[in-house]
Each structure stands twice: as structure tokens, then as C-alpha cells.
Length: 408
Image 1 (cartoon, rainbow, N blue to C red):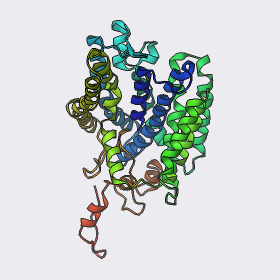
Image 2 (image 1 turned 180 degrees about the vertical axis):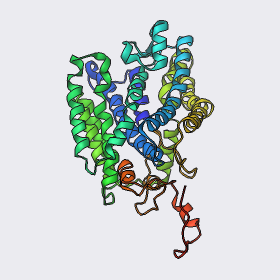
Image 3 (image 1 turned 90 degrees about the vertical axis):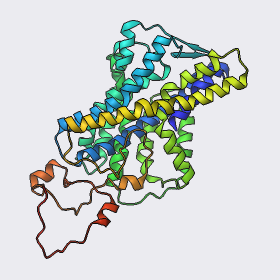
Image 4 (image 1 turned 180 degrees about the horizontal axis):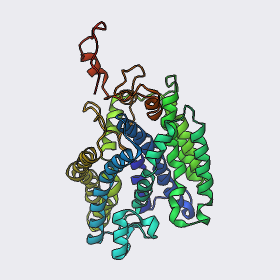
């Protein structure tokens, strides 16, 4: 639901909706959307940990894991962002900021355009051509660390090492402004790391979640209000840590309509995130001379239609193409089964779906992986093709008295 909070934040800023005193309204509205993005960082890191586990199930070294992962991420993020940046630049759409009932544009020049296309604005001190584009450089730079964090997390049977890493990240983020502004990624590492902690906590947990599901959104809303009305932004690190430590304690939401709505929203969330300011410009500013009913109708239609079209014409095809290239150039030993959908940051967490990714401890080991060196290298986890429970059930029963062929 982070994308909903971001859209509402920008809409309130454009409409100049005042819910406290005017002097602090813009500040409070900005923090409302900013905290939603921080929660998204926790979520995306958690889901991508499962994606890395799925990829690493077939074995392979660090370099192969990193290259495969980054190839998929590049084709997942860049094609749509490049298209939107080019449209905003050449159409001269004002989308870099907000004033009451007006959108603000920016002149970035050719160098700034290249920085926005490459998503390195924080490294080149370039203003983002889209107001919400600030978060994508942070994500891309964090992706460079996720494979190493995954391998580090799976080596330990305790959360203490990850908590120590989080403390170290907080310490580094505290002194980063005194070193260099180009290292602004350090400000958000403490927001990403709770996703890794939540992933490892789920793997170490021996009990089922017991907390009622309806308390989960209530807790997130309470933390959002706390982050919004208080001044220091650093405590967002602590709130994200609380989110990561408690995410696995809540039961799954069982309302089917709500799960389907969340899945549909997550599917198109990236397109909504990148294009909602364009929809705002088309409906409420470009058509300023028309009736309010028509303007709001155009805004609502374009807010839905543009992400839908872009997902099916650009986003999904390029994501599949990137997955194909990654498998061709940096193949995993065992490709994931088609029965299990690929996980990314837009995937709502479903424990039944994630449980299907877990490798049973009593499975037959392959290719000599049962020796001590193999177990140490693979984190004491056998290497074999992932199978769903349905595939296992369809297999014919084996006669234990007959010798079994050795798997290749």
C-alpha cells in the first residue's frame, strides 16, 4: 500500500490540503509519503531475499549469483524508468515538485538527463526530473549489496550478527553527512536491513504466527503517524527495525477480496509510482479550463490506464526478457519450476507460497553434495530442483528395496 500513500501525499500537496497549521503542513505531508517508501524498502528487501534463495537453490558461486540477480533487477527497473524520464524531458512536463495547485518543472540539461536515465542523481548532485524518482537510485545501489547480505544471513543460526550489522549501519549513517553527500545510500541501509532480518527470523522460527492479522495494518499506521508528527527522521530506522522484527509474528490476512486487491495493486504499483504525477498533470493542470468533473475523471482514468498499458507493453515483457538473459548468461543449476511464480518487490507476501520455496531437510542429496565440504559451502542445505507439493504428490511410489539411480 506504499504506492497509495505516495499518490495521496502528492495529491494533498498539489491540492494544498491543510490538516494542521499551514507552516508545517507541507513538512507533515512529505513525511507521510516518505515513511511509506521506507516501509517499501523493508518489504522489497524481504521479498528479494526469498528470490535470492530461490535462485541459489541450484548452487553456483558468488559471482554467478550476483550477475544473475543484477541482470534481472536491471531489466525490472530501468526500461520503464528510462521511458518515463524521456517522456517527461522531451514533453517538458513539470513533475519535479509541487506548489499549491501547480506543478514545478526543472531544467536539468543533457548531463542531468543522463544522470536521471542512469539513476545516479544522488552521485552527480542532479535534481530528479520526477519528484518520486529520488528513491530509485537508492534501490539500485542497495541491490548491489543484497546478494552479499543474503549469503551472510544464511551462514548464521542467530539474528545477533544481523542486528550488529544494523547497529553498524546506523553508526555509519550518523556520520555519513560529515564524510560525503554522495554516500547518501548510507542513510537508507538501516531501512533495508530489517528486510534481511525479517527473512532470517522467518527461517529460524519454529512456531507459527500467533498475533491477529488485523493488528498488522494498525501497527503500521500507528508508526506512520508517529514518524509524521515527530521531527527527527533518524527514528525511522528504529521503526523499520520494529517492522522487520515483528513481520513474521502476524497471521496471514484471510479476506480473499483484500488479498486479490493487494495483489492487483502490487502488480501495477511500479507503473503507478512513476506515472501518477503525469496523470495529475494531464487531469488537473493541463485541462484547467474544463469542468472539475471532467478533470477528475481524466485524472482517475489515466492514473489506472497508463500503468496498465505500460505494464503489458514495457514492464512485463522487459522483465521476462531480463530473466531469459540472466538464465542464458548466468544459468542456475536448476531453473525454478513454472508452478512457482517469480518473486520481486511487487509480490505480496503469502506464507503458503513462500513455504513452497523451502527445501526439505531430509531430501536426497545430489552430485556428492552430502560430503562435509559441500554442506559447508551450501550452508548445510542440499542442492536439487525445487518442486511444489503437488508435483511431489503426483510422483509414483518408489520401491525402497530397489537401487535408486544417482541424480545428475
